[in-house]
Image (tube, rainbow, N blue to C red; front, side):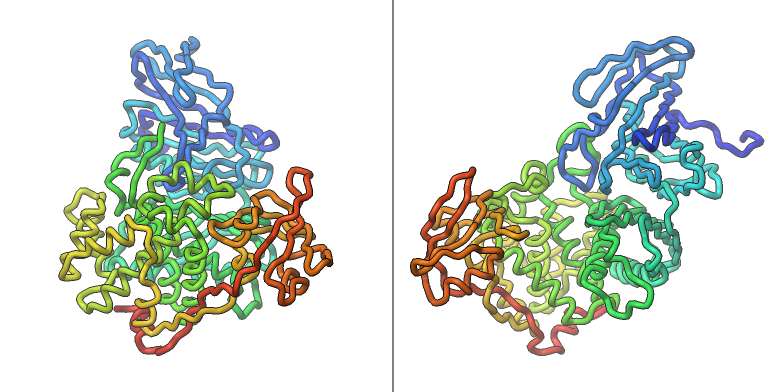
Length: 591
């Protein structure tokens, strides 16, 4: 080893520099030690965990290729691939820029105060060498003096601020370890003996970092114990990267880290004793993404055994990998002591009503929704609620139905099924990936009978789930309360000094009257009088006991008069404890 203790160079080396933060430009220099004669390189079109073709190559510019002092001919093959003509025995050097101006968890961002990137947005894939070691060198450029770095990549030689050299075992690991750069808040804790780090960009002076660390530790320990009991988890360390912004919410899972985004006002604040709803949502997001460390990153669909970065990767199992994760994210908050029974049921109530108020649940199964994610889930329009169902929310309710059914029959629980799947396909002697057949087999083995009918009905069917009967059997009363005006009419609207129709739900009173997405609902005529509507709940004030009104609507600058029959009161669910003992058994920290 050289005297400076720098290990020998990897076959592929990426040098990343924040070249021009004001112009939002990263500069990347990729050195390929032993290129092929016709070396093909490509930039991914999607990032695992977010199932939409995002065309990351649209942000790549000024691509140049050289070998020594000689320019190498480089031709573009398609939207994301290039071919370079190379001489044998000489390293290939590619230089290019990436415009980074997407302040989300999925791509890349750079300005004068913060940098962030996923490797799928910055790192060209050298085809044929994906399984070779890849080095990432992060340069502490003068334009970002004083910044720090956080990443889940193993460090080889770095400064105290984190700039320097990192090494990935292959391309998959390289692009599965995002990088956070800037003057962020940083804190650490250990969960079941495993080091965890939390960095937060954009926090205000009121931010209570100690509380966030304490609550995150409780979540991580609850989830490690869920999967492993007293044994160590598969990751030797873990990194949370949270970007606090004015408006935003979401996360993206990675093998030993996660990128999160939340509203700045939802961060915990010093001196605030209560737990606001926004902070509960943030804790649920942390719980969700951490659970993915097992469920999708290691226990994963057979379709994802090897990612194809140039096209859609279909799987019918997102109802399991996202939906079951959505079931456990809130449940494990309860088991970690960060929610009480009533708080958990409030979140479950919200999920149930979201599904029940979506007509698309009777049109699309969760298995179909999983395959359709690439064209429907991430591209919602005015008809989305009528034609689709979320594999997150309905998938969570499918998990609930399996769990309560298993518990009622007394042989096992969904917790045990998940751990058995981990041993069978994730951590044991299995192939490292699972299919629906694996899920069915473990259900049969632990549950003592075939669950083929339930899988056919709940996963592949569109009939209503047996939620009410199962909840009531486990001590939860399902009460029906009057719905809000929009739900009664079959509408989704925005109200900001007026009423703008976003969606007209299938089979509702609004659809029968002829309202359409994009309409501006101006007012109503009732018994010969006209009234201006500022918000939807004023309709009851002006309609009184009338069962029919005339809706005054503006559409494409035309004024329309639509006959609207007001429906009888519709109902919405409210879950409440009927008998506390069974619920505590179901929600208990330890089964």
